[in-house]
Image 1 (cartoon, rainbow, N blue to C red):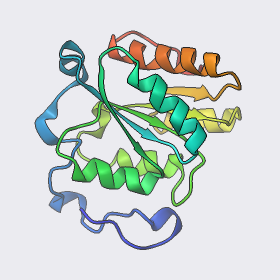
Image 2 (cartoon, rainbow, N blue to C red; image 1 turned 30 degrees about the vertical axis):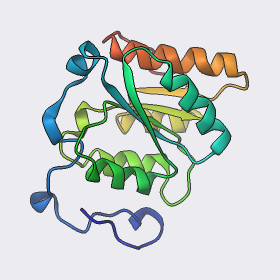
Image 3 (cartoon, rainbow, N blue to C red; image 1 turned 90 degrees about the horizontal axis):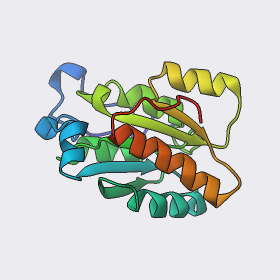
Image 4 (tube, helix red, strand yellow; image 1 turned 120 degrees about the vertical axis):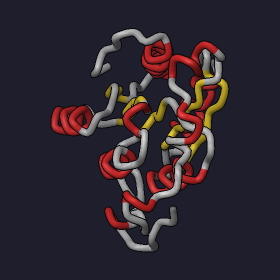
Length: 176
């Protein structure tokens, strides 16, 4: 699936209709999270434009139990391209809301239209504390909403608790 060169919310609009899509990384192998956890092969995609926040998050995610691979995309459009191009599915996406090209909300909308995307757990990780953003993200099917804390220690505690809780199949707090 190729993405158009348009701007704004249309920047990543698929050039194919839903009926003529090729299998994507979300559909490939149809590996579910439970099987991936049993094999310690959980794949995580970090969608974050800020290099400092990405560096911290990548370090934390690499140390999470059962996570075998962590990749980063700098914006939502690049993340959508990665999801449709790669043959192995991602199990968890850690998503910033405030990004260039398309924001996290538009990414969620477009990602959820891809085949088998309902199996992917999405952790929103953002600076926003605004209730409308929390509500909008959860309605758009985010699994969890985390406000980025000022402390690296608190950042690690929140992110590890969310990722490892998802991997263990635990009920996690929707807003952390």
